[in-house]
Length: 319
Image (cartoon, rainbow, N blue to C red):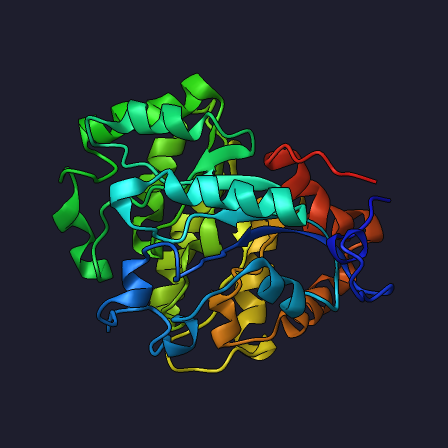
């Protein structure tokens, strides 16, 4: 079994902690880099409400402290809305952290698919060896009833320029981290069907924010459409709700439905730290997920917690 990050760095670690690869977390240094949402005016629309605790540096040492109760084998850094004027700066900085700390071990970067400089920016990202995929958020509506209003807009999933840029992922062997609210999941499934050679992983279970019967039915319909596409995986992550506590009682149902729809072999553990830390501790999250997985055998749980992420992001484990 590979050594965990804490062990390789000579840090205290829990020998009985959960072995895992974290398929989605963020790091940022606000002293040296620009993240407008963390440094400029507060975005009142943020999906978790008040996010003041995030408006500080979150460095590798902070992640190691948060995850110290687990055996973290490797991590995947997902772009965190760095200043878009220099989209490659974050990729460069994350590689510097890897050189110093031995993680992150895969990078999901950002490029605007619909802009003329898409291929040029993508080429610059590709100079960095940990690049595995792109997260580029398409234009989406703010509410379910407005979903149709953005169809075909520049940057939407029907925009021809956006689709041309998206096609570059297949050309360069990269994956797409899909992040849209649940009312756009069926459109995303159409993209997945049109590009079967592009590996896609849905972030945060499609944000099942509306837990009413009607809201869950809309989410379920979208998830079924995505699950029907064999090139799609899903991250079991970020189930926080606006101004509400994270509880196993409130989240267990959507987790179990996702596992049933996709199969555990297509589901990845992901912390979404530090954002998820607004609602739940790292260890609490792992414990809650282990509770949900009690009916699965050890091979299946290992697949969920680390093997699926290793394979999807092509991570070479050490040790």
